[in-house]
Image (cartoon, rainbow, N blue to C red; front, side):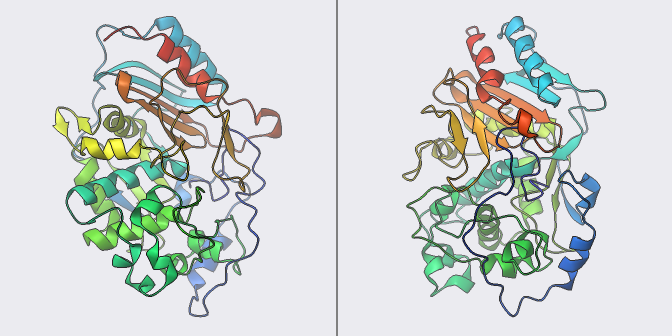
Length: 404
């Protein structure tokens, strides 16, 4: 799962004793009774690296292709020594796969034994990217009328509730003002019901506010769940089906899977999204090509521009983390232990970052460049907690570019 809700795998930074230091445990509504959650908790194994098979049931996100070779570049536009330098670094970080794409062609691919471009893996919180892209499709089609709509327009349970004033934009900017999610497996904690429950919609809608929306950036794992509910209510479609129609089929992707809280139930929007490296690369291309793929405008260029526009609450976050201005430690929140290290300023100002703990996707529109790193699940040890460096994975490539 994404972080097995404890960001199960920090390939990137500080040792995670907990995701957050929450001041109090959100109250559980008396109407929320969930025997199914107890069965899930009983099936947990020790540690944080849970096998993909544990995440049941799942729902397919149907694509439109059979496996085929990625189009390889006939002439490289990236210095071979720079690519090998990055690959050598990636191998020290428990790499499963490294893909580098530029201007419509694959320039580099390397995989660990037993892994391939077609193998699905747990995306952890890279899941945020397809969710944000799906919201862009809903805005384009008018299902979501405006990013400044209050969420109560779509979540009728919050009409007349102060939380209903949160805007769709506040969710996308991670400035919703909600109480910070903190990992838990205690049945008395509402967070446990949000992640392990089989009645998750009730638990998500019971999540409390903490501060006014739109003021403070804090990457909060309840926010994707709320945004996913808004998307499904606005479109009237199940999440997996909407992703299939709006993204997976237009991109020629294979079959992905989303985790459900119960058979026929609600999809997780924050964790446990299972797709292949090839499919993730295609999503990166959408970012780098401003919404185009294979000669088709899959998403509006204006939506990619919106993704890359700094929010009022955080100049390093639009709807995704932004590589500029320079931050040595990119934190999810001052109250969260997890951070990503960036050893030096990135060599381009328009780097978009999709952070998934052991996985990382970089898109650089000015260079039509995508770099995808897939890591090996596993908890980061204290000795290696500062070993990761975004700049070491990206800057040699940026400095080794030749004109297209």
